[in-house]
Length: 283
Image (cartoon, rainbow, N blue to C red; front, side):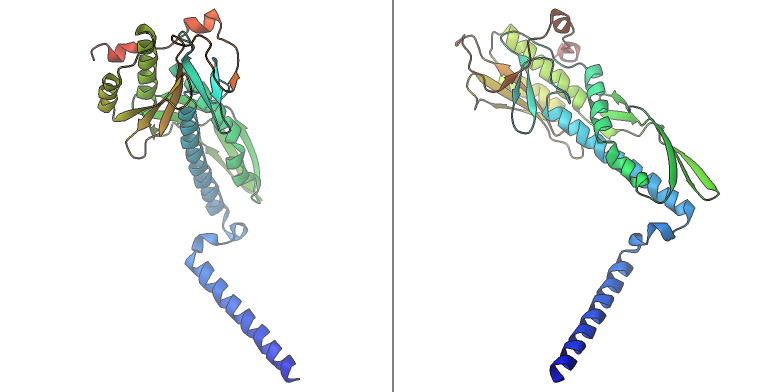
């Protein structure tokens, strides 16, 4: 009997401790109030804010991933190095090959956002609200110091007799970005590498990069390959890195390059090479 009584006391004490912990936790986190018990107006405000924050996170992720892959989200239009995480396109492969234009990068970012949209849609699809929505690809505009987004999403939420329409299509204030300058600098480096017969003036590029508060790093770990990384030095600016590769074929015609995929670009693609050299003509 004594043992049973002691066990009951421990069970009761355990329950009391759990109740106290839960009370403290929920009072310290008022935002955890049950969604279904809040007013319709507050529910729509939470969904609105959550979706906007969700898409902003996706915008930043998509820009970063584009930079890591030298301006691409989908498979590059020229040869590339493939590793377990991402691809690095060649901007020079014995000759100049396709370098992504501003317009192509805008499309690539939009495609990346589209692939991640369900993460944000879950915020209203898992709520207890009835909904209808119109969605199309996000419009992306790369500017000199930022990237602007126009989210083509119109969401209608309803519950009982209440209905509200949320239009997310107003352009955002933009994400701070040096992508425009990174792409220009990468184009300039590839063109110079070609003109100077696979020779690079590192100090020249660093001088140009510093004016944009960027830094150029070159990795020669892979045989006969230069991997160029343009690094962002400013806080809260995206992407953090911009990678591309250059082959070194003059001294070794039978170049040994690991993990190649894709065919050489067509003549049409080559004619679309985007060097954006005008920005550097006075350097």
